[in-house]
Length: 168
Image 1 (tube, rainbow, N blue to C red):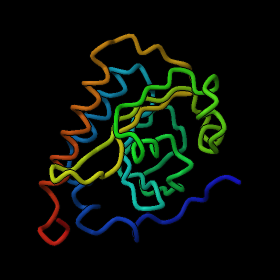
Image 2: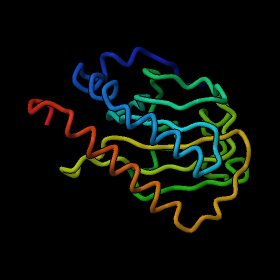
Image 3: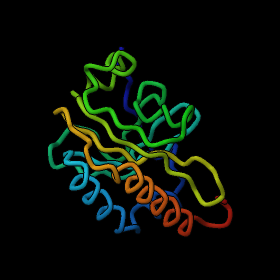
Image 4: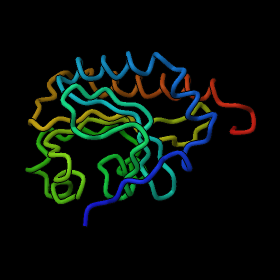
């Protein structure tokens, strides 16, 4: 059974939604991520205990993943960051038995994945920065993991700076 989408407004506070909306830098970062990875989708997601909440996307290929969409966290590729908070690159998802059977892979025709966990400066795992494509990708740039991690760290810092004291 495919995960269902629900309204994200109850999962994101007003301050979180405002911070994401105010941070024009995230759009630029997502565009840079697609250019650096060669992939056609990039997004930022927040994690709750059980959900993966889409905060921002750059989606010129129209994969169908939209801001405020919610998926069950455990069905996503990004859920790996809850276990191992290191960058993750999967050049050909269909050839990787560990990930190929996840419902989101089939639902969105994901063939390649690149992602990094987003941590807030106080050490809390916020979510993930990810790039997706329906085509297999070669990740031959040895600096790509560090670059993706730097973008994720920047997003975490910018987002944290926009949160109110009550959310901290």
